[in-house]
Image (cartoon, rainbow, N blue to C red; front, side, top):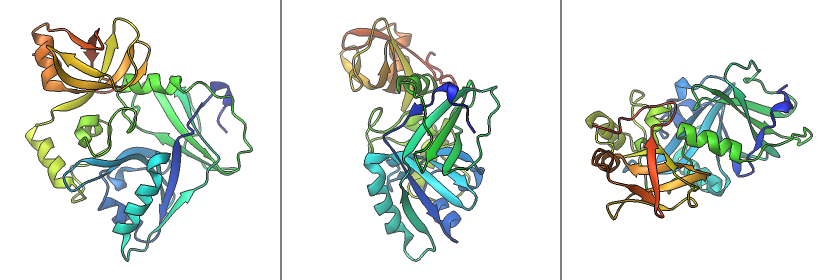
Amino acid sequence: MINDSYHPVALSDRTLISISGLDVLCFLQQIITTDIDAIGTGDMLPGALLSPQGKILFDFLIGRSNCSFFIDIHSTAADALVYKLNLYRLRANVEIQVKNYKTVCLDLRPSNDPIKDNSAQNGELIFHDRRLVKGYRSIRIYNLNNEKQFSFSAREKWDRIRIAYGIAESGTDFVLGDVFPHDINYDKIHGISFKKGCYIGQEVVSRMHHRGIVRKRVLVARGIRTLPLGGAVIEAAGKPVGRLGTVVGVKAIALVRIDHIKAMMNANTPITAHGIPLTFSSPENMHFSLCG
């Protein structure tokens, strides 16, 4: 079992949806952005269900355990996603259920710390969140019976790591229906496939990818003092160039027009949020050229 001394982070705002059945592989492969064949047992990758225009309607993590798949999604969007999945199900042999897990938590370990991350026992499901490719092992634990007691760290621990790695989540960092997968770096964290074939919205995002017309990105913003709450407009030369998302102290997730940010940085034009000067950098596990 996982050592509790690391004080996992409680995730009280997540819901787990199970998807199983004889047709589950084909069903999921044809509607979501993730390459289902690339998800190993015990692993979780980011995924999304898109509109036909390529915008994200639902963002989530999807994991595999034996012959079933599990979607971890913000609780406010869970019922709507189940409804949408059932619309697409038609006559497919697929069962979709919301799982009543009592505890959902996140165990963050140094990447060199050996643990059993692909096990399921004692009413628990355990998945390795593969979005963090270096520095940390992010283990998501779903507990059915609530008998296991954890000593939890503050949610800020996870938010700091999300900021450093540019891991955006809907609600706090972007608005559903308003962004493309590239905008939130899904092409950098295995959240979207360009090889698996057709799925809803695939034609649009594939065209964006191959033509290199990505205009927005999630970057890491840093202020010279404590930043305002998430949602603050980022401005340069009196014009909006993006918004802050999750904020912890002087750092924040920033969804920005990357072409505008580059131009302003090259011209040494101040970029601010509520008057606080900002600097920008690429997330730790990816790279975007911000100059030149």
